[in-house]
Length: 217
Ligand SMILES: Cc1cc2nc3c(=O)[nH]c(=O)nc-3n(C[C@H](O)[C@H](O)[C@H](O)COP(=O)(O)O)c2cc1C
Image 1 (cartoon, rainbow, N blue to C red):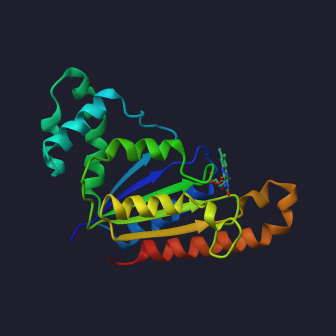
Image 2 (cartoon, helix red, strand yellow):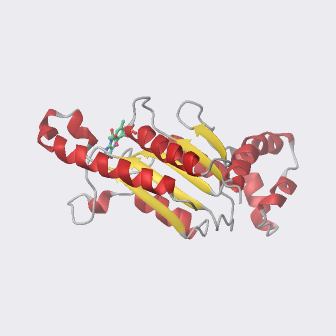
């Protein structure tokens, strides 16, 4: 069976831990799936626009007319403005629909996801839409530590948001999260004593993404 990987990155940095980790997953996945399809999208370097009013009209039409099949969304286009909005959505959505695995490399920004990633989610999401059957892999880097039992655990609105949204709205029951933590220890002199802990976290994340990418699924 041929398989398709959609690979997204969202860090504003070029030299980025989440980019390195998502690339490691993609390399392992492509080695394990020689005939597989691969699409890459850099949401930071090539940002998708925020949704506009015409987009909301498409969304309202789909909801009002109980259109739940993604293949029928184009029926909602009735004006030139809506056609422009749809021309942005359509390629983004096609990439997701065609994917068996959606890989997202993302930093934590302000306890959550970067606006660049949120803009992509807003563009591709419609009411009662199902992406069930796909695996979502989120590879994240964060400056602090948010693991279970840490003082900052309740502030992790990144993994929590993505997990709840993919499961609760898209009906995705196969979502995997790998986090490299404490990267601020490399920059912030006050956190210098945590550099070894960061290195361990990064190495563990790297091993995890290589193993996940190499799974012959
Ligand atoms: C705008 C911005 C906001 C950030 N907010 C947080 C935050 O809320 N919590 C945190 O732990 N780190 C935060 N950081 C640190 C990043 O998560 C960290 O640098 C991470 O390694 C970024 O991923 P990258 O290396 O893939 O760019 C922030 C960094 C930036 C630039």
